Image (cartoon, rainbow, N blue to C red; front, side):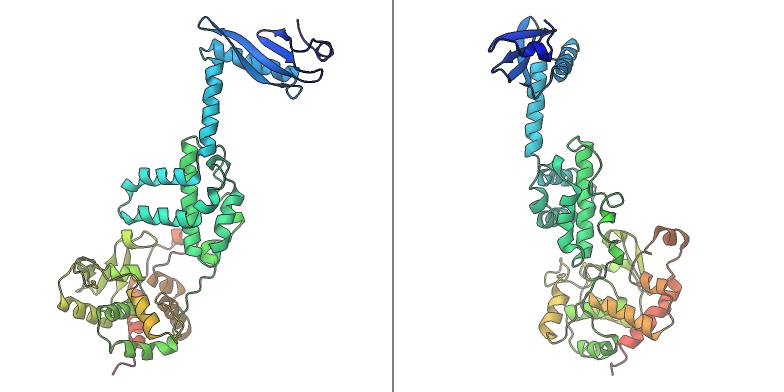
Length: 391
């Protein structure tokens, strides 16, 4: 018989009553019961539960039964489909961000030129993202979860935080493409995260630096110590390059006749080739280092096949200048302040010398030069100032 709410109130307890088309209701008490769907598949009678009454109404139960009949008509066993969906839900509940991130890195690492990138990716996500994002299944990660990852480090470790955000977004995008996640990318910068945090280049990043007026005396003192580490540090100061760019310097990046150092894009933070005009003072350091050996790296470690440690210059500064609060990276800030206060230098030229990109896309689109010829003058002026206290 066709059921309605009035008829249900008078049904017998613990007796299966048909609503038609395979839908049945069995009351377990006067006010509660269970819906089931009975059907035949490949000649075998089967029955599956559809849920409890009255939580599932008559209309909802009939719609569920219709869905199962549609599956059956399409050659799909509804019970098998239910088990498959249940298994998928169990797998989704067990799938964590760290699992998807590891799979993504394994899939993409062959496209990276530098094999260290894979480990760097994993380490940054392990240290900052896994502890928080793995608290919920991957498919339930929200923008608020991303905020919890980034907030503790956004102002203090901005560069790291921005990289972590980009990497999380890539991993979630990967998960979306595989059907692990439904909806929009909750870690996307433009549509989500930019409304929570300031743009990275607008966040003040403070690396303790030596006041530029004290630099000539420091450099003169530094020049009295002749080691690979101090030569590398002097070269870093004169070229305002980053630590990794200096320690990985190879001779084929240098054009001594043109007074030029070309750092390939693979080694640059902005992934763009950077040309550095070399002052006579910088060339002199290269000559000193090159005359000592013919190893792969200009600033090599004790092992001829390996470059100077990334931490060597920092350790030298910490060990020998504990009373002065500055870092190796801070010499870039020293240069920027010197350029702003002592000369009429174009600000874009100073930023290009630091291998910084212009902050907006519109600026970059219309600015088609790196001001290399003008930077030659700038870097020579800088070198003359830095070395002005050397006898």
